[in-house]
Image (tube, rainbow, N blue to C red; front, side, top):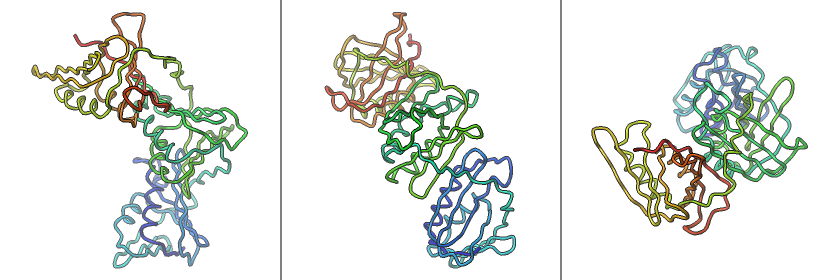
Amino acid sequence: MRFIVNRDVFSDAVSFAVKLLPQRPTQPLLSGALIEAEGEELTISSFDYEVSARTAITAAVTEPGRALVSGRLLSEIAQRLPATDVEVLLQENRVEIRCGSANFSLPAMPVEEFPQVPRVDTVSGSVPADVFADAVAQVSLAASKDDVTPVITGVQFEIDENSLTLTATDRYRVATRGIDWENQSDQGSMNALVPSKIVTEVGKTFGGDGQVQVAIVKSEDRELVAFTGGSKTVTSLLIKGNYPPVGRLFPESVDNYAVVNTADLVEAVGRVGLVLEREAALRFTFAEGSVTLEAAGTESAQAVETIDAHLVGEEMVVSLKPQFLLDGLRSTHSEFARIGFTRTDNPGKPGPVLITSQRSKDESDEASFRYLLQPNLLLR
């Protein structure tokens, strides 16, 4: 194997291919980046039996071949090479990297023992890359980080003929967003539970690729999803299990709500929350024309701030965790946010608050992002 490739293109390709490699692979081989050179194309891929990443770039190949080297080491080297073309060649059991005055020699791992990287030839449908990236950023932060319950560590994909709905929850909040879906198969309605880490990385990486093609494969021998944008592809095994029916938690309508300037409330929460202990909540009193934030922290430290708000319906007092509220507000991606108040059968216990985007103080937004947050017990 021998080829010459543009330094920046090579660095970007390697970085993409190894980004999802596990920190502690179960086998040394699974930490490798597979380099395949043939014709005028260079393919770099990684695979750990659960997640794969693969990308193809143009290179001047003089000797076709394959090699397997440490992925993270290759990525670090590629990022620090001088700004000139890179020559890579395989000599016996070592991979030589030459770039300007820099020369590296890496041990090659046995490529014949590397697992076959999954190839998915079908396409279930596609979505606009920028819209998909926006939706992923809004929803994925609500997925649980606790591996004790794997099903809520993922993002649920619900596909109908012309729509894709993304949903995530960690029991304390639920975030959901619907986007247009261009159906390209006869699979009909589908559900797929994708690890949130994978969805987040795909959203960031493929956001500028025009279209993201999605393939969902459910057969007797494998259940996986594949995302393709441009010349890059990521595959992941699906999370097994039944996703909780969190959609039914959303109210059909909310008549009691407040409209606030998103940036003003975000800044106020940041200031008042300075006196709080970890995991403590803020008390919010919503009245016509204003919302008052109150915090009681350690060593008798206290903070109070009032900002403008437009209230529809009755006055409301709720206690909310600052970070969860900030996540919801920032995810609206709008100048104004609507905070809706729901009721429970217990008059002393408020129901979840529903956060949505708002075009202006008086006009609601038709965007389908919704964020449901469970309040804490009221501070006394």
